[in-house]
Length: 407
Image (cartoon, rainbow, N blue to C red):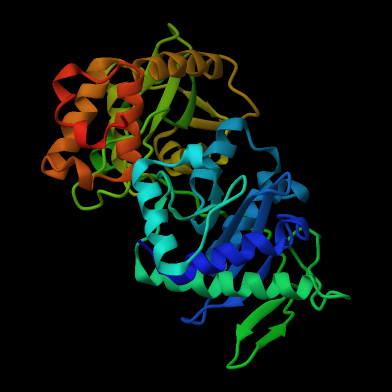
């Protein structure tokens, strides 16, 4: 359980009404204990459901800007739907969310009972239950447990409460611009012994024409084979996040990753080619792209031209294509690949409820957890409960997972 101070801050923020005062683009900053700036954004749905996100440092600010980049003319403005998903999955931040009771797991309710005993707080209303989450690239969000993340959230949420109090004054004692987060001033709060010092530095333009997308590299041997290969036809290619998650690994049992893969359709015959799954994207992008080109070489399917529809895929492939003599072009859409992938993913989503798929996932999970089902991450427990409720949990697991199944 996180520090009781976080729950007390969350309760005060929910009652402060700040969600009715600010829009999501009205960011402000707080100087964190390590000297970095935490950029805070308040998002509300209908004025009741609140999410407060904290983006740390300059990289965090750039992440925030990507979410709202359609407001001005920069390369992200014409993102495809797949690119928007990829950009969203790449975001890294900490957040405070408020949930309804029906969204909670049994372990959560026990935790809130304990919080009530320790702090005297009561959780009433439509969305009274605070969740403190960490969002990492290409992972499902998970609950904060690292003391450093707690420290960041305490500093940031304390500043959020100060901003709320100043906004509630008559007249308001702080002004936050609703213009896009580029080339404008934002308030930065710095905690002093008795109060906050507020400065209003001007943000830079933030127009980043080199967004640092990963660039895959192949071995000299693979590059040589591709360069020598006979090339014919055209290929539509993209990098897609898959509609399922991977089993957590032993070293990071709290991280449930969302894998990606390279998919392409060949103009000569219409066959779809797929790379190996990239579970640790973008770290393992080299091996993933290598597996894809190995498949093309084995099937004598190296194209003269590759068409992509995202800046991500273009960056990943550019150096390779330049080096082996394959033309690489960027288009707004891929008329053959896009519908084929939509159909393929629909079949994948259906197969996720297949008992064989569930059996394989649960087998991996049990091996990692050493058979202790009560210590598994909450998201994994949720997956087990949903499989059980849908009748997709293989019967042999009924007794094994009985301690965590809802009655």
